[in-house]
Each structure stands twice: as C-alpha cells, then as structure tokens.
Length: 109
Image (cartoon, rainbow, N blue to C red; front, top):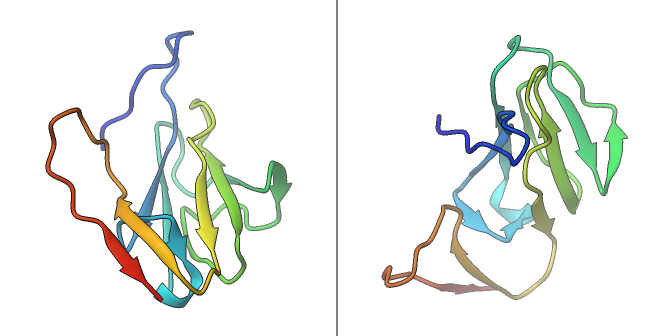
C-alpha cells in the first residue's frame, strides 16, 4: 500500500475501510485493516483517542460506533476513520480525492 510521509519523515500507518465509503456505518458490517511498516500482527488500535484492547490483529470487524485509528511498529498513527450508526448518512468514496475528480455520493438510510 501507499504510505505518505509525515513532516518528520516517518511513514504513517494507513487504515483501510471495507466497504470503501466514508463515513462508514455499522449496518454495512465494516472491516478495518491497518497497513504500515513494521511487524505484521503487532498493531495498536485506538478508539475515540484512547488505546483500545483489540491489539495484535491487523484486521477486525467493527461492532461499535466511534473514531478509530491504528499504529504499526515503526509507523506513525493513521488518519482517523469515523464509524457511524446514524439512520441517514451521505457517503463519499474512502480514497484520496483531488480537485476536478468526479465523485459519486451516496445518500443511504
């Protein structure tokens, strides 16, 4: 996977969302996967800014709403991913978007 460089020059962990839409919603059976340098299976997870008990697994299925981040050894903290349980949500693709890109929006409930 592609890992951007932070200002300090260290690689940043990346948090992949499946299905690839943001904000993610619980009723989509969301799976998060942490990618980055360092030892596989040594991932540290954070939920709502606090270190969270689901450690060592690179992938897990989300069962609670919140804001998730991950960190692999030797990599910085990933950008946050919000998982919602809202009844109505406007979603955009969970990928980098550039000015001029055509974007598909989804209104779901």
